[in-house]
Image 1 (cartoon, rainbow, N blue to C red):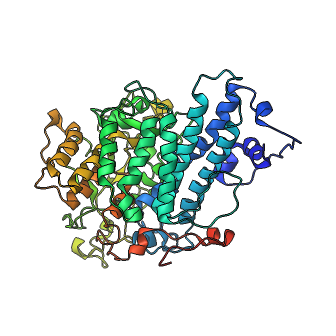
Image 2 (cartoon, rainbow, N blue to C red):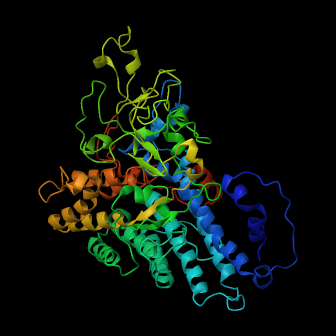
Length: 568
């Protein structure tokens, strides 16, 4: 065993994940080999799980991946709220696409996936040398473990391709430092890894069977679908027909048993590890594998724990919110995209303030309106800044509404609405991915798993492929099959039709269905909208170089073979 492997084991998850120094002293051995070190099935499973520990943290707890996909889009912003969240105008620069190669959050977008690649190859190399028969493993376990590590590498590289383009490509931990491969080479490499892994990945045979974060065959195919679906943006080659075939096969059950959940709370609620539509998720359980949806503490208002009956350990930094749909006077903006809360039909069961009703039951996915629980009037969220001591009324606006009538802002019409002029109650918030219970049910707090890939994505992907290849009626049928679950008796007041389905309806359907799930930037780039469309307080740059992020100077400094992306 190489020394770095032993250090991984000794230092453990906390030191690696927090990127802090480790205080334990390593114990050195003259020789450690898999046959002696991995002497039990438990030890082998621990080795297998180490890269997945990184993946769970990267996807389900660390905020950087989520921010790369959501901030700077028409979906979310982190506005300056009075004296809060200016941070050297960092979040204002993100909103306006003023990206530079010294932004730390972009550095994490490169560092964390490449670390995941190294961890997965490292684990695979150890696992490949273990005698599985000698340890009494079931037939096929070795092949499944190796395939899952390979698919995990593909997933990390796919993120790198999506954010940066061509990546340095490695097949083992024994290769020397490399420069960047081309976009096409990276695309083909990811594709080859998935082709290699998919046949040996486990197949989910039980509809609604327990998800545990492992990569099954449908997840491998779904990664391939993501790769092909965005091929035009990645390598300039449209692959919508190939994508559509994979989607249809997955929906038809070729890669395991899945179906759409009838209720969105089955997908995102407190027992969603048995969701029928979950393809790949980040496991979470209170006091065990806790994940908080990466953005929870950034999203919720100060004192929100009191709205949940004093829920302990529920941080709230009152930062991120949805791009507003209304101007300071209450009039809707007329941008083609953005302002997603206003795009939900008023009869949509999701479009209401989140209220926990006890015993794992809740309704709504937004923090909006007067934050006073209608079933428990003593449960309120009060302000700490402009509205100190008052019950917060969360609005779909950004403006100094508390200053109306002052000498500076005599009327509501005189109020500016910019990324730098927010108050503590500005912007609707989203709790879809990480619902929380009352304090009385605190043991349920981290029970919702974090969906990473779900069957609805495959339906929407197939719908867009049909739309792009001329079958708008077929596309509408697929989207409406999902939409109907959000309306009483399945009666949708505003269904998608062949007549109303265009680029913007499709983009807005993606936004409504997948709001806060960490994919918006990719969808905008695929449609050429990320740098060409205007939304609230954001003017299109029309600079295609901004479809990719710059490589951080520290990464460039550590590898002189790397070349910077164009335009930076």
